[in-house]
Structures are given as structure tokens and as C-alpha cells.
Image (cartoon, rainbow, N blue to C red; front, side, top):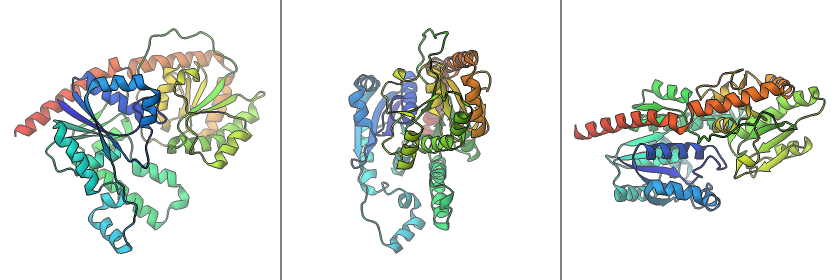
Length: 419
């Protein structure tokens, strides 16, 4: 089957400055493993690049590997209107075409550019990775079925990012419109795929056609784990602080959990903040300086920073999206200490067996003290978490599951096309 994979110009790698690249690479690899004839289309706004070109320069070998999976690579340059319509036209657009009212990139010029790529490739299937490619791909009047790669409910993330201070009528109307846009999108595609247990359930409740939920994959390597932990123990927070889950989660952690750790520790542990900080607020930057946290910025090779059996905190308090950093934690045999909500998207995490899960951030602070004082517990949990990665999230385990779904989908689409 000939598949056109349409994706934003983000890094296509777990080592990119954000979690979406892990999902992109996982699905591209699975499609390649299923025997799909892949073409890649990168959608980009020249005024606001999302990091693909920088990643390609730094990780040229990874890019060459992905290119080897694809018969051709296309680029679609977006034009975003810089002038706003008058009040009457905005209100009319909100009623007549709420999709383009909320997302101005949905204009005729951009849709025509993507249409030309589709006509050139002549795919049997369009695979739209995340929201912008999904909305653009489904605006094209075509008989080519579209599979939507669901990463998150973006209206919900926007609501959490806005915070309780913005619960006015206008904000509620915006959230409602955004939710309606996403609900319509998932209902009009030929199928949806997701790596989230929770959001797979959401999609089924919306009666979306051909929903597939399978684990996110992470490359695994057979390597001998050490039998002792490096000292001093580090407490690690990983994530690009431009993203909502990372920035709000870290702020809440510093406000609630970390003071408990400082109060109850004779010698405070090292706190390492790993991830891009270019968009961090001045107040958060100052707070990190005041507590003398080690801030690494973006690290291209996480293996130089993430050590086995260090404590890896995930303080996000909501069940949204896909916590890709949880798999990074397992890969490096770190001890995952997260909220129950933060990893609810994944199967297999069991508190006390391969991680520690808590209901609130006060409990997270107390668990850090417990882990700091228990070397054997850290070793056991780190090793068990690393085994979980191999048993649940390795490509060798997920590929057969994906192949069965993809073969079934191909049969259905072929049958429907002939009907």
C-alpha cells in the first residue's frame, strides 16, 4: 500500500526537543516494517520553524535512515494570514467555517499546495500525523482515505495552559470551538491511531471508525545494567519547557514537592532539569537559580545525562497525551516516580513493581526521601522498569500487533473502494 505520511516540520526522533518526534518515528518505523511504500510530506510555516532543519543537521545519520524508508520527500510551505478580518467577518467565519476561524492556516492557498503533493504521489492512504496535518489533509476533496495520528486533545491542553484565571465567556467559547473542530476531525477520517489507552477510549466513545490503540515503540538494546548506583543520586526532570505538561508540571513540583524534600533531607539531592529552556518564564528561571538546580538545556544525546537508578520525576497531574519521557526513563533504567495520571496513557506501569506512582505531589516529595534512603529499592525498580520497556514497548513486540491492524485496514479500504 502506498502511504503519504504528512507531518509538521518537527524532529523525527526521541532525541528531539519535544515528545512528538518519538511518536512520529515510532509510526514511520512501524509503517516501514509493515511493508508500506512510504512518501514523506513535511508541512512548515517558514516564519515559525519547529526544529526539523536544526535536528536534520545535528542528526544527519538518523535523517538518512528515515529517508531510506521513503521513496520521496516533499515540502509544503504554509502561508499564514497576517491581517485580521473585521469584527463582522470574524463572527461570520466562526459560524460558517469554525475550523478556519480557529486555525487560519486552513486557507485555499495552503490546501492547494498540499493537494498538488497528493496528486503527484497518488497514495492509497494519507497518514496525517497530529492536528495541523490532519486538518489540512481532510480539507482536500479527495477519495483518498485519511488516517489521523492522534497525539492529544489540543483543546484540553489549551485549557490547562490558560489556567483558571481565564475562565471567562470568551475563553469558554474558544475552548468549545476548538473541541468541536477536533471532534469533527476524528469523525470524518477513515480511522484514528493512538498510543494512549485513555484517548483510545475517548475516540471509541465518539464512535470514530477504525480506532487502533497500540503501544508507543522505543528502540531497546541488550546491555548489561550495573549493580550499583552512581553517587550522589540525582533527581531528574526531563522535558522541553515550552510544552504545557513539562512547564506546568515542573512549576507545581517546585511549589509543592521540592520544599518537602529540602525540609526532610540532611543533604539535599541534586536536582537536574534536562530540556530546552529558551521559552521558560523569568520567574521559573529565577526559582531554579535560587535552588541551584543544574539546568542542562537541550541535550542531543540523553545517554550522557540520564544515569541508571537516578530518580526520574513526572509531576504532570492530568491524564493527557502520551508521556514519551516515561519510556526514556525506562530506557536508561532510571526510577520512575510519577503521578498516577501522568502515565495512565500507558499499559504496564505498576507502582511498587516497576515504578512508584502517587496520587499527589505532596506524596511525591515524601517518596523522593524514601528512594534516596533505599539503594536496593532504586536498583530493583530501575531494572524492572527497563524490563518493562523490552516486554511492552520494543519494536519486536509492537510490530506484529501493528501489522495485524494495518493488514485489516488495508483489506477494509480495498473492499470499500470496490463497493
